[in-house]
Image (cartoon, rainbow, N blue to C red):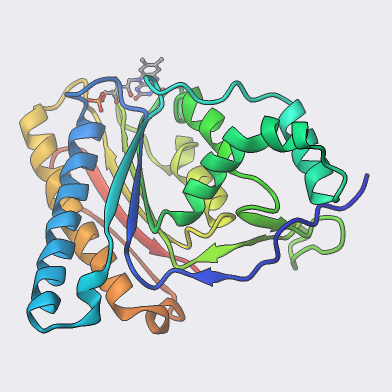
Amino acid sequence: MSTYKGAQPNLNLREDLNNVLYINASHNETSLVHLTSKYMIDQLTKQIRNDNEGSSQNNSTDSEKTYSVKERNLWEDKLVAYNVSHPAANFRLMNGKGSPEDEEHFRPVREIAEELNTADVLVIAAPVWNFSFPYVVKQYMDIAFQPGINFVDESASSADSDGNSIYIPVTSNKSLVIVSSSGGSYNESIDFLTPYLIKAFQMVGFDHSHVIQIQRAAFENRENLTEDANAQADIISANIKHQFHQGHTRDKATIQHTGSSGHHGTRIENVNRK
Ligand SMILES: Cc1cc2nc3c(=O)[nH]c(=O)nc-3n(C[C@H](O)[C@H](O)[C@H](O)COP(=O)(O)O)c2cc1C
């Protein structure tokens, strides 16, 4: 098998918060994961707009900053019907053997992969389905994660000290926010949703991860759950704003702290990994 080449790991450091991408796999408009994600994004947007207004009054060039929020509803928006012909076309293109047909066939995949590269903050709303996330999230990841576009595959030539293949992200200093909900309660021993998403999205540059887990959605009072989840979303949106304000200097620090509100079955984690 030949080695993937594609883009170089230029570690395109994202220093400004320009683009928020919301990947919505919630059941409906009243889902706790959706309401919490929307609340978190609204809080972040308010803070960014306030900042931009402040800097515009100071005639700073920051006032020229663009800020956008884009939602992809994974149940309603049709993704490309991805199959093995798409990575095959990408392989040929990366090895300089692609045809115009390959380019055209791969184009809708490339668009989704490039959109992920431009996301500085990615919010994923996902209920727990059978100990993990609904299949549409995996479908999205299989399309969006592309060697040569958002990571460089070094697996043929190198491995880390644990013997795992090395994949180098093309972008860095980006934040992932996972908002999940479950009908019942569960602890880390049966959580196959958050550890996987954190690990997988590190591969494509999301080296800061934040988690809001809403548990016992089938049993607890939804207003109480929402109140707790929103309080956690406030903390996360402030942390994210701080991350981008501090730029790459803060990115060198390794910070890990986990707390628990413990009131109504919600749990927050802020994990910044390097
Ligand atoms: C197909 C399916 C599988 C599910 N699997 C689980 C599960 O493994 N564990 C659990 O606690 N809840 C499970 N649930 C319940 C959902 O997690 C729950 O309905 C959802 O979190 C409700 O929250 P929301 O208000 O965010 O939609 C499942 C629901 C569906 C539809």
